[in-house]
Each structure stands twice: as structure tokens, then as C-alpha cells.
Image 1: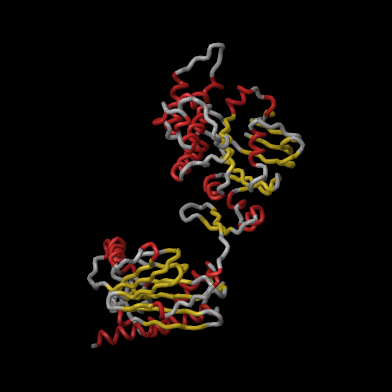
Image 2: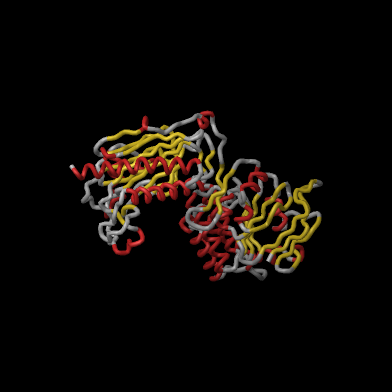
Length: 489
């Protein structure tokens, strides 16, 4: 659809772009990235015919750009520039209607039913039909941006050129706009070439990306290849980390602020921060901890500063446990969004906790355990799926900096240790009579200060893994024995 070959040019005697070549397919949403001054807007001006290149060629649908008349080009290519404060004394509908100029013919150009239908359609799709009688100067920046987008779409172009299309738009309209453009590329074969300053929006919506650096092509590739940590750090000269989008297979870049002095202060999580009662065990961290957990509240990965293990009756109704737990926390003036919360029918007086020190790192473990609903996981299909309040809840607080691998490996190591304790304590699945491996609703928390020593691994024979297995073995064994003694009273 569009081919750029050896493009060089800029303004007056200074060249902004240097020997740039790439190709855009029909129906692509093609993003152009680069820091300020890298040549993004200059490129768009050359493709739209505003600037003439010094060298190189621009081919549209197999024909040189210079071979199209202005009206022919307007039928083929529409441009949405960056929004300016200058506005004309036109109504919204009149402004959008200007997009139909290229499709009118003859000395006495007339407005057709088709023109009217197309204008109404694009106004509705861009959410501006309710403003059709308003003048442009009466609208906000975001509303005007949508008006000019509707005008561009009214041209019914095959190629749409956009310079920062989400500029001035709030979050909901950013999403609506890009969803609409993506839909049109898929359903109508519209080719969209857009400049983005927001790397995450580009990574989320674009089929391919061009990354410019000092007027030259750094790379043209799929978003996952372009948005590499090392590449973006080098081109933009800033600290970023790459993470996958939590819902779709798309890359996202996270800005990393410089650490402040207080971020380097050592914080040791231990029993000083632990508070116990018959109703609740609570640990209040002085800083947010990076967590991964299977708690009722705060499950998955996140950052949390409050940790709750709540006692509930063995006949507790688990059907609405999440909502009920949120209400409970609020009555205790605990913010659910900052909390990992679990529940158990075990008496909390039987909790076991202990602080273990390693080489420049340490672990604080808190465990409650009961085994009345023990399960052999290999024969779990023989059990009903009825939820029962959790009976083995394990908290592992690590005073150190964990990698993503270490978080996952910590769970594996702790679980393997739990199985070993179940074996040594000869705990059976009451339904099958076979050796139990856990209980039906066990829960685990790994929480790290992310300060101090870097701990890359937590497998069973690593220093961290050894400390986790030692601490879980000790505390879980003690908690199980306490629970047994209570039942024997």
C-alpha cells in the first residue's frame, strides 16, 4: 500500500530524515515511535505531500506520490494532524462535511444522500453527533480532536495518517478511538499510519512499529520485538522495564523512577509488626511489599502493606466470601486494596511463626494449620468441590530483592516442604485413606521487601530455598502438632 525507499529530507538545508526505507501493508495499523526530534512528524508531512523529500521515493498503491492530483490524493489519503488552538467559525457538522469535498464532482457540486449518510455515520462512530450544531470554539480539545477525526474518516480514505491521535483525549475516548481504528483496519481494509508518544498504546494496538532514532530507522518489526527493554532504554535514554499485558498477549513498557534515599533504607519484616488475637492475625508492614498470593483478597501479584489471617466458624458460608471479606476489612478500618487477606477455621492461638536468618537476607514465616479436610491431590476427583475455610495458610516474608523466578520457585519450594511435613506427620485423606498432600483450600503468600540482597533463585538447594524449606518445615510441623493437641483435649 505504501512504500518508502531511501527517504532523506527535512526543512531548508537541514535533513531530519536520513536514508529511510520501509513498507506498510494494506489493512495494517502501523505505529511510528521515537523520541522528540527523531523525525516522526517530518515523515508524516512527507507522506502527506506537505514536505518534499530531498532524496528517495514515496509510492502509494504502486504509483509515485507526485503523480496524484490533489483531489485524487484526497480520495486516497486523509490526514489528522496534531490539534492546534486555531479553529474556524464552522459548526461540527459543517466541519465534518468538508471531508466529502474530494468525492464531489462537476462545476456545481451538490450534496447527495450518500454524503449525508457518511457524515452522519462517522459522527456517530466518533461520538460527536450530539454536538453537530455546536461551533468548534465551543468544544474542548478532546471534542475538537474527534471532530477532525470524523472529518478525515468522511473522506473514506484508503490510508489514514495520524499525528498523536489520542492527544487531548481522556482514557475512555482513547480506547474508543483506537478500537474504532483497529476495527476499520480489520473490516474495511483501512491502512492507518500513526505517530505515538505512548509506547503502551502503540504496543497494544499496532500490528507493526517503526522506531526512529536521530532521523534513521532503528527497527521495523512486531511490537514484541521493537519494545525491548535494552532498545527502548538506549533510544529514549530512560529507565524502563518490559512486562506482558495482564489480559492480552501484548508488551507494555513500565517507567522506572529513580530511587529516593528512603528506598535504600533496610527494612526487616519480623514479629515486631505481627499482631494476634482470637479473631485475627495481622501484619502491618511499614512499606508496601511485592507479593504473590492465593488469598481471598489480594490474590495474584501486586504490592501490599497489610496482611490478614482471619478466623471464621467451620460452618462459614463460602458462597460470597470475597464480598463478605471486603466488608469485614472495612469494618476493621483496613483498606482491602492494600491488603492480602485469608481465612481459616483453625484457632489462631495455634499459630506458629519464626524468624530465620541467611547470608545477608532473612525470612519471617507465619503458619496456621489444621488437617481435618486433608486431601490426597492425586485422588481429588473423589471429593466434592464444596469450598471449606482454608486450613493451611502459609505466609513467607522475605527480607531481600526477589526476581520473578524466585517468587515462583518460592511457592514450589514451600509446597514441596508442606507435602513432606504431611508425610512425616502421617496425615491421611479421610475420604480415601491415602496419604494427604495438603488440604482442600490451602493458601500461600510470598512477600518481599525488594530491598537489599538480590535473590535470583529460590529452588530447593539455593540459599533462599534452603531457608524457606527450613522455616516452613519448622513452623508447619509445630502448627500441625498444636492443632492435634487441641483436638485431644
